[in-house]
Image 1 (cartoon, rainbow, N blue to C red):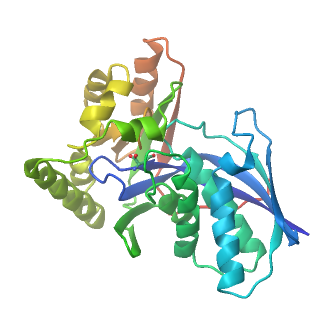
Image 2 (image 1 turned 120 degrees about the vertical axis):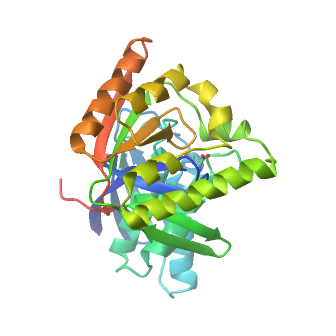
Image 3 (image 1 turned 180 degrees about the horizontal axis):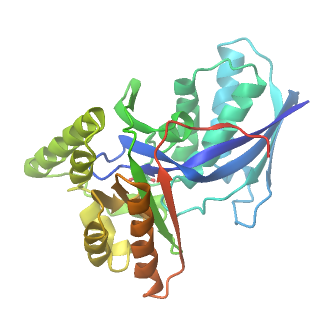
Length: 314
Ligand code: HSE
């Protein structure tokens, strides 16, 4: 019987303009899972954290992800079934908007793949982990959290059918600040308010920004990255979930943010800039915003790096 201990980072999805197709890893916080596999069958999931998680195994996001990997291992690789035991130390609160379910799914499939001798590529692990995202509802079947969680850095999902994942260049001076207020917005709620159709003018705005985001990363131009982190589709209808959002955003820009927007479906908010000191300053503004409204909140700042899900020893 073998056990691995895995860290999977939190992630910011969408990055403003890239609804469901862009995301990046925030290495300063994440979930830790211990994964054990032995010959046999069956899945056991234990919650070793103070955070409430679904008690039914069928409702845990790691379940469909692990089953998808095992089915492919048996069907495609001729492997034999495994009895899998997962212990979850959940650090990212569900419903916080920084890829909570994605981190657990990513860690689970990464760990199992290691234990099986790495039969699958990281890109294939993204496909398995996406199965977990389907469980969170609201028509979600997206890779913009799981792909950066597994691969690290900034990731573009160029296509879903077939899945085509592109790791974008990460400038050396690229920092993110994130605030996670202690209010819950489920992905299902966040997706429920989205428009089903958008005017052509809105689409043109969004395309321009996605191009600007990719170009800015390729050129190492943080100002271009930041000013492309606009969102004409989801932000206008989702900002209602975040108390004082417009004021917060204005304050973040005043504090030096190059760009800011809602992280995933919210209520977390992120901002980017080009120095560690700037990221810390922006975190203070974020913390003050929610403190002044008596809403507990956690802040994180992180240099964006290419480190994704990995084995850890402690
Ligand atoms: N792209 C997804 C959304 C991410 O915005 O709904 C959810 O975390």
